[in-house]
Picture 1 (cartoon, rainbow, N blue to C red):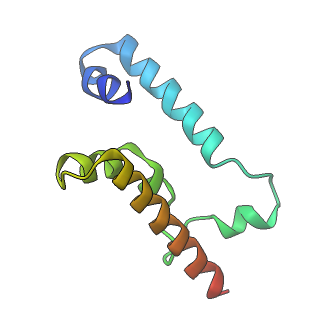
Picture 2 (cartoon, rainbow, N blue to C red; picture 1 turned 180 degrees about the vertical axis):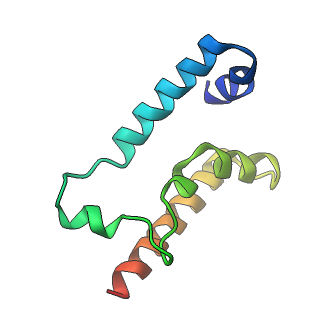
Length: 94
């Protein structure tokens, strides 16, 4: 579904708005953490911890599938593993 929205959005303003709404909702649910909680600082982007959107966004997922010919499952597992490694490495440096 997201692939269809991404392809159609540049040509249809209604679809572009639906994609924006879906992306905003996904990001809000995925990256929500209470203000002033230790986890907010832990997951904040830094030079050693790139923004989480790289791991959980559309582009990296589709690149691994389309360009590298990975299955969606393999791409999902690899991105999740890399996100965990990056977050753990950043936490260990503190």
